[in-house]
Length: 430
Ligand SMILES: Cc1cc2nc3c(=O)[nH]c(=O)nc-3n(C[C@H](O)[C@H](O)[C@H](O)COP(=O)(O)OP(=O)(O)OC[C@H]3O[C@@H](n4cnc5c(N)ncnc54)[C@H](O)[C@@H]3O)c2cc1C
Image 1 (cartoon, protein in one colour):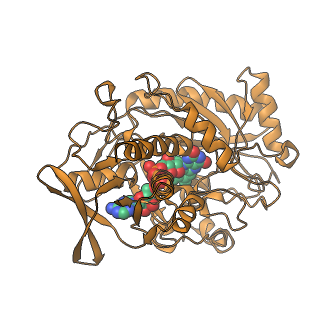
Image 2 (tube, protein in one colour):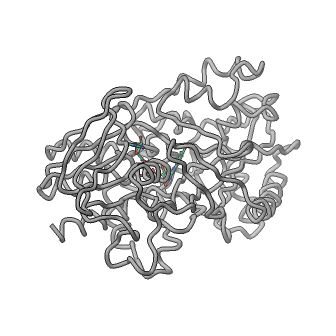
């Protein structure tokens, strides 16, 4: 049976591996090019950032095309990976169980979580390699009763060079990303086509029979298959569905991140992987994080050097309210409810910084979000089929778009677990 998988991120690579392992003739269509890390960015960005010559966050997409950043409103930047491995190649490598919204519907992904954790090899980053300031913040958080815990990570500490630039790609190969699954699929005989954006689904007699791709700018061709699996992420999948006149919900969520920056001379927080611990609160987590995007592009952060900047991140399960347009632009605001909860989280973050001896001024970074989901959500009615209402026969969705609720937690494991469940459903029905 011929299957097309659209996208090679957490969802796409997992689906491609599982389907190819089970006899499907898989073609993976990926909009981006082959990924290569770009950690040298730090060396030459540093002198430019102080003078403001680095410009806005748009500079990064221009210089490093795998990172795609768009503003959904004046204050909020949405970040995704458009390359082989999708957003996993620019991730911090946190691998955490979360299934808000699905659990309540009665979908339990724990078996898939267990299986994937073993494959990915999940472990915490050695405490003795945390920066002293990060340890102090951990103890401060404990003292304040926030119950911090070491973050499960897909990072091999023996290979990790502690460059702190996971979001620019891992140059030492220490961090897992979904290209490992993708390569597994290729070993099973799958074919990968890069720089091949899918525009729409071909539907005949109510059934999906293929896709239309843009093979070069302005040139469109058809590729036919028995099964089509959409895993282009919360924005990409919604865009393809809309182009195909299939239903999409205006419920995009992004797990909004805001980092509170303080100062500690010589703290060198960048010399460790981001987010080595986190504390879980209702609707958000707090975690140590030198937000490189704010460091490079956020004017209020400009005066402080990399060595002295210290950050503590708030990651919020935001309001599920956002629209993806046919052209891929997004309308999403930070709601009043989001602001209220972020402010509460910031007051706790401030207490941690103070207790850990991190100096003022405490300055907010850029509002951004990189967990893009919710645009084709599952609900109680379609748990058996694992397909949102209105999706035709032979077409499946296997990415974060399916998740109805924001998580405020890392989402790779959740996406991969869903994709695994859906791939097995496809295999069972074929
Ligand atoms: C900076 C950053 C750091 C993160 N860190 C973590 C972390 O540490 N831990 C964690 O759990 N989560 C993290 N995440 C979130 C996580 O990476 C995503 O939630 C997850 O990868 C989502 O999987 P997905 O398959 O839905 O989408 P993606 O992984 O984004 O994959 C979508 C793929 O589809 C492709 N695509 C898009 N449109 C088309 C099209 N029209 N045709 C063909 N291909 C298309 C894209 O190029 C991409 O390869 C991070 C995200 C970002 C942005």
